[in-house]
Structure formats: structure tokens, C-alpha cells
Length: 87
Image 1 (cartoon, rainbow, N blue to C red):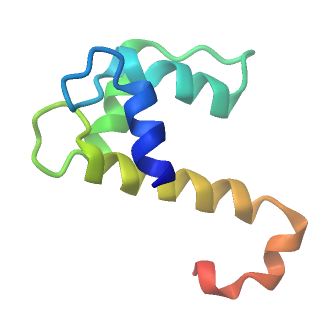
Image 2 (image 1 turned 30 degrees about the vertical axis):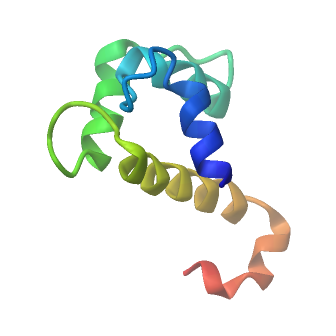
């Protein structure tokens, strides 16, 4: 449910896909305000998860992206050493 709400929040134009311009605020939040990624760099991130190669993220692709990001954030936490199930 959380993924769906998050997806809807970032799908600003309501077309059921997330384009680079829509994903950019989330990426900027993840990497920090000091770093600035261009739209081409954001598109490269989308392309990694874009299974149907349409240049956008649908809900399932976004869930894969979000899950990957979550795992990377958790693994940086010292307590994550107790979370072997993330492997």
C-alpha cells in the first residue's frame, strides 16, 4: 500500500507512469540537497528499472526501484547487521 501511495504522490500528471522530471525530487531527497542530478542522469536511473523500455516507470518498476533504495538505506544503518534476510 505504501508503494502505491508514494507512486501516486510522485506521478504528478496522473498518467500512471513516472518520468524523469517527476522522479527528480525523490532522487534529490535521497542523495541530499547538496548534490544536483540532471534529467539525463535521472533518466539513466529510470532505465535501470524500466523493464518494458518505454523510458518511464510504471508501478511495478517503481516498486522495484523503491525496494532497492530501501535496502541500500537500511544496509548503511549499523543495526542492519542483524537483518540477514535483506540479502
